[in-house]
Length: 296
Image (cartoon, helix red, strand yellow):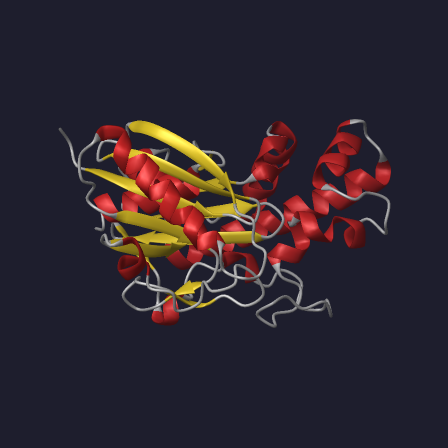
């Protein structure tokens, strides 16, 4: 039997878990409410999840991968920086608590690993993944390995500046970030209060509503400039887009291709494919398991 690992995704609403083989076969998946009550008791739910999944096959697992918000330490043993939620997560040592080998990975990096090991980036050695949702995150696959950088800060692609004249600053202090330009959280500000979510904005864009058309195409245009900039900086073989905003499908990808025709540098006819990520809300758990099973 192939080696197996458990992948855990620590979300604000649910803790998601998978039992996964090295070839990507999912043997079992499970959800438990996070119940982040501020006292750290949610960690016991993780232990319960691990016991449940490991007991399914009645064989030891190679380890546990944990996808979490925040910045891991240099050895991916714990989350070093995660202010504001999931009380007790910072500096918590999962291997000691679970009594099994455990590796911790940033949640956007986990989404990249899911696609690189099992999904639409499989077979590529140099690729990017961008998560488009409430905020905007990302990850870099360089020479076949997840690139985390000094302090594990690499891949915060959503904080690329696309409008330096904007005074609104994100959590990293950068003005006019891509996250502000297209993330779901800023829709009311970007539409002068007319729309409250990307879903409402896209539906109105499909109907030809002028304010929606203006706001949505401006967001997609700024996404295209960021993608073209990363193509120049990293020359990836492929870029995958993930997250809830990609459910806009043709309303996103059609204008995005049009803008990229303007901005992408294509020496010798080279073009960088832009693909929709294969995995949905279980990508974090799957990528965390892949980080254990395929660390390089």
